[in-house]
Length: 496
Image 1 (cartoon, rainbow, N blue to C red):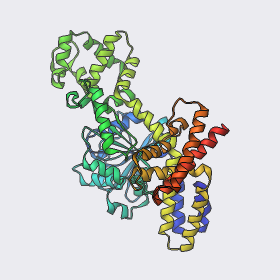
Image 2 (cartoon, helix red, strand yellow; image 1 turned 60 degrees about the vertical axis):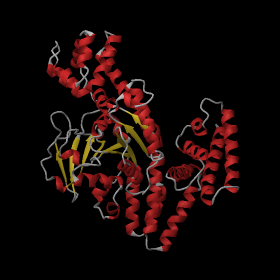
Image 3 (spheres, rainbow, N blue to C red; image 1 turned 90 degrees about the horizontal axis):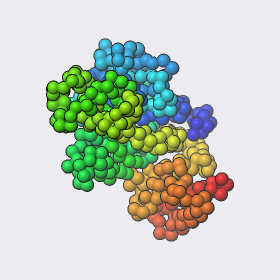
Image 4 (cartoon, rainbow, N blue to C red; image 1 turned 60 degrees about the horizontal axis):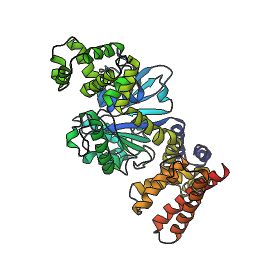
């Protein structure tokens, strides 16, 4: 895609060439993932957990009303970017986070750029967004512009700085809590990349059920009184509501993940928990009944220390820690922190970020770039220019290494319902397009190379037949793509 844009720039008008320059910039940058969701869904807390540092403000303040882009930098710094493109550096607060008060007129601010010397951000730019459903209309507008949910935002002429920052996401991590609402589904359905206008789907969107520890187990059938089981079952139900817009819905406890991952859990916290573990069972259970009882009950652990534990871990995290100490009285503070991290569900979220986003970042960015280039050509008033771009794209897509773009396009069309397929074939298209692992693509994990080779050829032949007999014209286009995907897998297995 980069070579295509570079080669076309001298052959198109100045405006189209400028668009190609922006596409090239995006191709060379890390994948940009927006963390979005309703207000108070715990987005910023989850951002901190993903980054491994308490840097995004989580209390309601002027900074939570702004889009903030967290990206890699050789020096930690925060820049306020104004609507006119001007920038102003501001210092981090005493705790190492973005200051609650920026000292500027918030209405003149486009967004914030936070640069961190953090390895996580080398290949992933994380964009924290204001919440949908905020009482602040300006914050809602910023988020809706980022998600592409307002038609007027899509049509408006944004200044380049705002356009790049506010609508710069190529993928989305969508945060829900206990109930999926209509605007959650609407936001996901309308999610578009700034230069791509591609709907969200399993290629570029996953969701998390945050605050899983607040779910009442008795309210979820089959949970058996277990909080995490209840959260997992509820996540599965929400996945059915949000799919095919998302690849998955995963339960997570953002607060516990942030505390465990950001260094907020200290040796002093571990010692305080050891003190609580020594209390008799009746006292412990009484204190864990509510936040008020936990902080006001008379015991040897100071009330201020307990308030800190509650703020960092909530009652569920405290209970998990006490159970770990009961099972292993000599457990170290580091091992206890790792137990809390495991209990938060963060590992599963990071794993899905790797498989859905990181492992396919080039494909996601290239697919977004392809859509951008196509849109730029369509917007051109020169028929010859449009034809030159069209011809160059066709040459590119004919190459075997570019077939992933066809697969991602087919997957998105099927997932969005733009091309109706029988349920079993829809599932197969999703499987082939949603993984880079050959065994997973074929749905045959653990099978021998020969079995995988034979099956790939069998399915290639089946999809070729389906494309010619029984498929609608739209289905036939999808079938051709899937046939070639299986054929390329077969070639890869034979030559490997």
